[in-house]
Length: 406
Image 1 (spheres, helix red, strand yellow):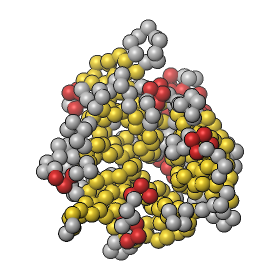
Image 2: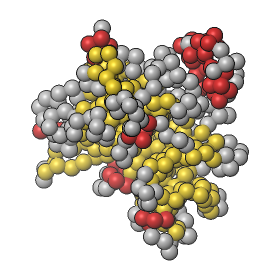
Image 3: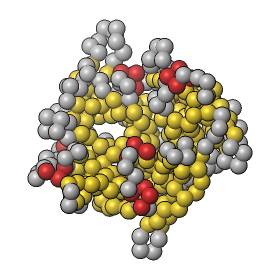
Image 4: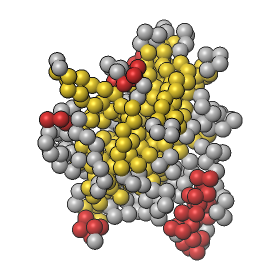
């Protein structure tokens, strides 16, 4: 039974109580998850999230990333919590779980954000309220992963600011949320330097999260900035810094840099404005320090490339592009770029420009043994219901934060 696809397992749960009890057990879920991780090279999916202009709603399309790509294509039905989010961003994915960030004002106060952890395979989701700290003096930088030993989803929240150097004390600078406890706790390991400002979203490679960052440097004529990578070991919860090559470290427009994952390696994608191309740099582990190697450039004469969204299992980049004679706001598309021929294969998706995100995932049973549509708040948990039901849209369940912490 442990070798069956998830669709079959979900069907078997409705056959008998004993099968349901077996499949829902933590031991079965853990074993199935380990098995899927071992087979991940053969069973990978690519998720594309984008917005359409009319109506302006988010859409999710899943592709099976194998030799049939992109023929096996599925438009996903999103769960309640995902639908309740305002314009969302993908924070990351880990062991089959996708993490989205957005606002949901009916539950969060105006000073909070909402993270939704979504198992696409079983259409189940939970959410976590992420409060701001200090009257918006800081902004939240987030990372998401699933512990490889306990299968426990975790979130790291870092308070950062564009003026960190002048701040003497940062309240709750780094906090970690663990789903099994339903609570945030302060990180007990080393903290990032206050002069470092985190930029954008992170990428997880093996057991490490990576962010782009800027280090504020005092100079004779004022201040300067140096780009770098900040890493977070999810096992030891330690932060480290990775130096970038000079051409990347001194890039004046940090918006021209982004991080991504190519197979099992971290890559930095650089926009070369002079050449109108994107350059892919891969990080390599050295004996003493890490180094970066320039792999290749992405450019085409037939279209305007807006950005590199991610990479297939085969290593081919997925890019957002606009045909030269089209309006970007209406005709932005996702294509696969073939390096040898510099040709593109269109995936048949059109949306608004700069609204795309790409993430890979595998099938998993994680969250199957947890209540659906639960929102973990600052002091309480809430259960979300579809609007229009006889029940209140948000029904508080009798589980206070104090109970979760005990």
